[in-house]
Image (cartoon, rainbow, N blue to C red; front, side, top):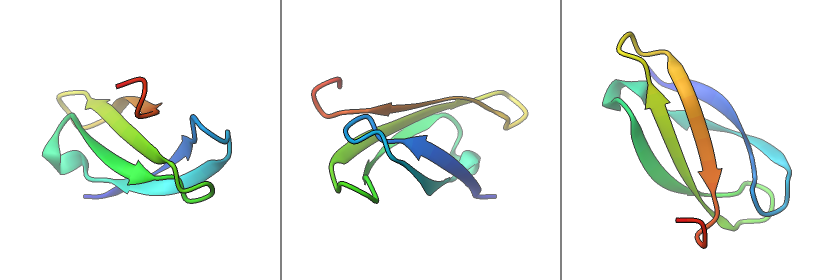
Length: 63
């Protein structure tokens, strides 16, 4: 199952939607902001039953 989530860009502050694959468990991936095109590290954690517990959007300097 793929979940649609809303992300706040840590660079420009705009929000945009993206898709996460919770079937892969807690994970991270790089994605460009849909508004300003800056690279964002998306890091998420899931509960054992697959519920999204946290989602971080980090700049490349915060990694």
